[in-house]
Every structure is written in structure tokens, then in C-alpha cells.
Image: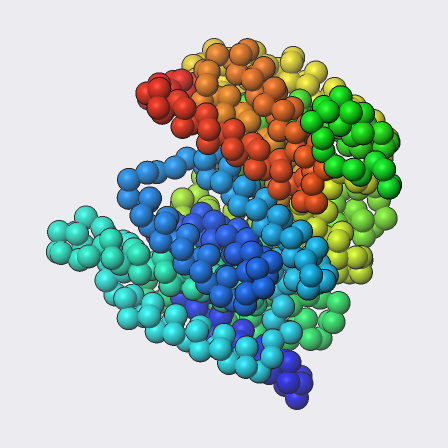
Length: 268
Length: 296
């Protein structure tokens, strides 16, 4: 399997993206920010297609859109607590904008077909070139390191914000830093599993780890391990069964792990 | 095709004649009208009951349903309605108060289920080997392919759904506004919730066929939310919700016909624009309708 270059690239990029998703996802579940991850996945779709329509690098569009929206959410998050109706209305509109960019792009002079949209929505990890895979791996590694660097105060701030605040921890700055890392990871994961499925890779391993252990450090490691295992297993599965899209296989394994974790908790 | 696509003029009557010249456009307008009325009514109850997230989940389930029906060679409507009805029953089972899990775990579960559903839909489309345009129209809607038979199915579904809602409307309103008192008065709260979720599934499935699985919110939530910003009275709010849904659907279809951009974009933008506009005006006036059934 690893004699094929595209599989080696997929494993290289996929491993680091999965590690980053697992680490960030644990915090996303811990801090109750699954909805923020959902928002970022919608924005990723629109950002990537806007960049494609404008003829810019799709990855740049992804990064700018997700980081920009993450910072805006951080700013609004303190004061405004928008209800799900407002959030849903904004989401629908953001996706509608994405459709607009999609049609501009497909009708544009580049004469592109609809594959870009499908790649953005559902990922294209098997289509990465060696350079792209290396870049994705490097960014994933950086995101992991950045998160681990702030992991200790972030855990403290997430679990017990009152005490953390009274000890003088810069909670606001930490929240911003976390949202930025989340945005970068979302942009990376969009290339691997797609904008629509990245929520699964963020929420499922983190949720499973939360169900299996109450120790945050063990949970963090478990979440990363589950994400990595889903990615490796999913890639191997889609290689063995060619009609299985890799992003589906990865998400199916991650969701399966979550369901198993839930069942084990019910039994004990 | 040569003369008809001349573009918009200020001759509104002429534009309307041009709009209704093609059967596909007439069918799209008929289907859009049915869906807008249905979505306006059910959406109003959904926003009142704070079940927007359930609507979101059901709309995500609509995609694998439709894709699976295509793969199995079944009619598309069958997939939409079947998947959404099954999803509604499952949601009713999960959202039972006794099954209330830890909050973080619950939203993680919803996220995982949504991603899995979308992935499943993608798998079905890939297995079908269909054209890429197929995914887009399932996710983002199309008004080109609506057949007369589809319009008829939509009409029957809407009539049944609205008739059911009319019979349970009064107790449902009671339960939605004040669940505890309604339960004490002997209203079958659990049964009503299940029936409403089923109706919501029907409405989502019908809406998804026009604006696509991902944009259902634009018709189901936004007009209803706008209406509830303006008035808290049920009869007026319902009428306003229907009117707004009809307005954005008709305008969206009309503009999409004359413009190169897709109908999903126009419908979402129009309804979002109205929502934002109304909120701005109300906040400028310093007045907001007291939301019905909101926690005090």
C-alpha cells in the first residue's frame, strides 16, 4: 500500500491533521464549543470557494476565512450570547454565499468543473502532491505544538474558570489563542476530510475520550490516539475497498469509536 | 431560448409573462409556494419550541436519504420523506428527558451524527457514480428538475401535514408555551412532541427538495424567527411567517431565473436580509416583541 506515492502523501498529511484534530477536538468538547467547530466548517466552505472564484490559492482563502471568523466569534463571545436561531440564520446565509461563489467559479473563465466544490465539501486527501502533504504535515505539527504549549493553562481555564481568573490567568487571551488554533486546524482538516465532515473528526474522538476517562491529560492523549487510529484505519480501508471514499471511512471509524465509548459507559 | 432570455426590464407584467412561459418555471413556482406555506407554519412552531437544532439535524439526514434513494433506484421524494421521518422518530427517542446526557457529550454526539450522515450521503453518491452536479443539487437545491408529479406529492404532503397541525394546533401551542402547566392539565405532552417532530421531518424533507439539504434553514427558521421578532401573537405571527416565506421564495425564484446565480443563494440572502433588517429596525425603535414561551 505504501509503495504508492499518493498513499504515502495521504498518510503523512493525514497523521498530523488527525493528531491536531484529536488534540483540539478534546478541548472543543471540554469547552462546549462544538457549535463553534460547526460554524468554522461552514465558513471554510465559503472561504475556499471564494478564493477559488477569485483565483487565489484555496488554502489561503481557507485560512483567512476560518481565522477571521474565529477571532470575530472570540470578540462577540464575551458579550453577546447569540441563540441558535440567530446562529442558524447566519449559517444558512454563509452557505448560500458559498453557493454563489461556486457558481461564479464554475461559470468563470477558468472553465473549471464542479469537482472543486466536491473536494472542498468532502475532502481530497488522496489527491495531495508531495509538497502539499509536507506543508499540511508541518502546519498540523505546528498547531499541535502551539496547543500543547498552552494546554496546561487552557485546561485549567476550561475546567475551573473562576479560580483560574482569580489566579490571574489571561483567560481572554487564552480563548483567542485556542480559537485561532482551532481555525488553523479546521482549514487543514478541510483539505483532508472536507468542510462538511471535519466536525466529525473534531467532535467524535474528543467526545469518546471524554466518555472514557475523567483525567484530562489521559483524555487528551486518548483523543489524539483515536483520531490518529481513525485516520490510519480509514485510509487503509479506502485503499482496500476503492469504492469507499477516504473521508467517509475516516469519519465512520471515528463515529464508531464514539458509539463504542458510549456503549461501554452505559454498561459500567 | 433566443428571445425569451432577454433579461429583466422594468415592464413587470412582461417579466412575469416571461417568467411563467416555461412549464419548469411554473412547476418551480408551484412547488415553491407549497413549500413556503408549509415551512412558514411548521417553522413558526419549531422556533417557538426552540427545536431549531432538531431541524438542522433532520435537514442533514435528508441528504443521505435522497442519495440513498437515488442509489437504490427509488423515487427521490421517497428517500427524503423516509429518511426525515425515521430521523424524527429517532430524535424523539433520544431527546426524551430521561435520556439527557452530559451536555458536552450530547453536542459531541450530534456533531458526530451529522458528519456521519453527510459522509454516508457522499458514499451513496460515489457508489452511484452519478454526476458531480447531482451532489450540488441535493445539497444546495435546484428548481430546474421539478416535475408535475413532484408538485402533486408536495401538495398532498403539505395538505396532510397542515391538516394534522390544525387538529393538534391548540394543545401544541399550550404545551410549547407552558409545558409544565399543560402536563398538569393532562395534555399528552410526549405524544404531541412526537407528532410535531414527524411533521417537522415532513416539512424539512419538502423544503430540502427546493433549496437543498444544507439551506433548509433559510425557509424554515429565518422567516419564522423574523415573525416572532415582530409579534408574539400566534395568529399574526403565523400569517407573517407564511407571508415572509412566500415572499423570499417567489423573489428568490424570480431573481434566480433572470440572474446567472443559483436559487439557493438568493433565497438565503433575501431571508437573511429581511431578518437582519427587522432586527435593526426593532432595536433602533428600542422595542422588541416579548418572545412567547421564553424562559423568564
